[in-house]
Length: 325
Length: 154
Image (tube, one colour):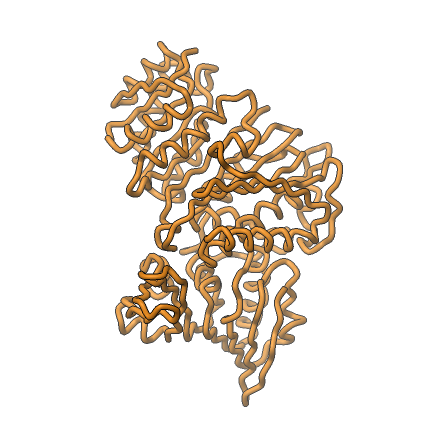
């Protein structure tokens, strides 16, 4: 397999973005304009990573058809872990991507003023996915990033951890509103790691109906860690659990669900709310989910610091997933 | 952790919420049985997580179904964000006033200004600049208007 990044797009901004990402990831960039040409490259070169413009459903369907006709959708020549969909629309408006068997990564094409800088940022994600396992916050950040690891022994200590993150960010010159929003994201990730990740031998969620204010001991298999990294520009926070129980379909359904038009219905049969991740994504956060079945899950959220909240909220964002079975 | 200060004004119960709303919140205990008219002051709510949102909707929806007239005043930016994200967050209640975020063009300080919703509508969502309380510079609205004021246009 050649170490290359195949870009299927006619847009110059995608080409700048992909060129930077490929450079950081140590991959050779191959650019084509159509899905048909892309399929030929897949057959011939077996590229390591594929970026593809899927701004419209027609573009996506064309890709799906060409892949199906050439190597097959479930061929070992193509893996969802290696496919990165590029689209200008918000995630909730591209359900055809959410439902795709090829979904691995979604890049919301909001390069703002700088496709080079965001290409470099995303290139570190791509580089991490080239490893045997994409775990470890240090692999996702610049070399100068300072990373702290916090072990949380009790679920009741979540709120103090969240407040500590908020205070750290305010000290790091994030606006108070940004710091609060990021702290809320951390709250959601930790709550998921503590209460949603634990499953029994049959894969059944152990705390589905357990009140989120219950005090749980987080030790052994139930240990939860928070890793916090900051490189002067991006802050990233990872919640780590040892269950490796993340379900991709449920995850994508949750994260792409919005309640701006339809009513949120309170389900009393489950203790969680099911709206945390979608809220974080809508607030400007990017996600990197890595899960190895029955072993470990790391969920990382990224935010870039800006002088204005308006730019902060409108920042480049992505959802990236790596699943190992 | 949230605290509540209650004040009875005639037929109206005014509750002032202060603190983060998260999994420990119990509105039934904090506010009690919903009265005929309930005004909720959200000025001091800096943060609400997803389980807090769920508890909020559960309590205020039940109150509304029992006939309580709800009014939200001095909504913090965190509450406005939820009003925008969740279509039924206000549970049929009226939003009277909201804090609007500003950023100083000179010293980059964060400020908030209190606006009545009716006034924002009259201004066609174009809220006027403020004077920075720290450097007297010009403080401009710091969010995406269509998003921050989204609840006024849907």
